[in-house]
Image (cartoon, rainbow, N blue to C red; front, side, top):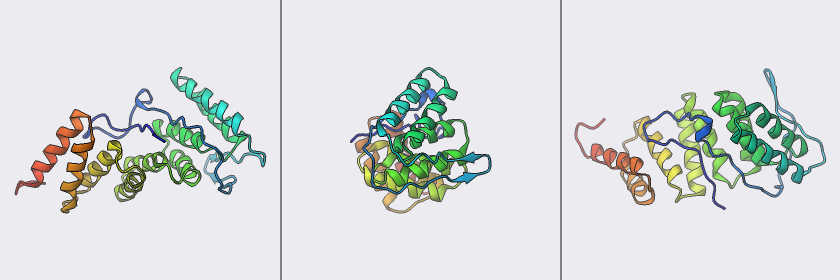
Amino acid sequence: MTIIFHHNTRPEKSIMLKWARIVMFTLALSPLGCQSQGSRSAPGYETIAGESLRDSETARRHNATGLQAIEDNDLDKAEQAFKNALEADVMFGPAHNNLGKLYHTQELFYKAAWEYQYAIKLMPYHPEPKYNLGLVYESVGKLDEAIALYDQARTIEPDNPVLIGNFARARIKRGDKTPDMRDLLTELILKDTRPDWIAWARNKQALMTSPSSD
């Protein structure tokens, strides 16, 4: 199942994107066999607890309403729609992921991380929530945690150039100069189709062979 990620349009740009650049996660997943986490409290915020009855079809409809509200630039309506989806079925992972994206674009990093973590529990074999949580960690300066999450996502979809690119970029940002970095950049060059990322990877490879490279 292919997942479309929101990502940097250019390698050296900030990882935070305007909402218009973000593609919402629209997978209609069947309920997964995970236990509900129930309600989780945080200062001024509580994760939707949901009822014992899980109405996944209603959740999908509310999730679709939220996605349309994003297209219409009505973020308040989108937030309410995603919450409605979770009230119908707290185990509906895409709504957690989409609500996380909504908070992420508003730089509400704690809330975003909370929803991404919930989505990861519900969708352990899908790379996007892990990747998104990595973006949050990178946004708040936790680079090691971000790299670990990018790597986990890349393991699930090893040929996805978005995952390869951000994993490589974050490692270079951390200052990694291990021998496998050159192989990682080669992999990105071979699998990516974005000219700016390919040029970036080739430039980083050239710098790695230079005695004066940073």
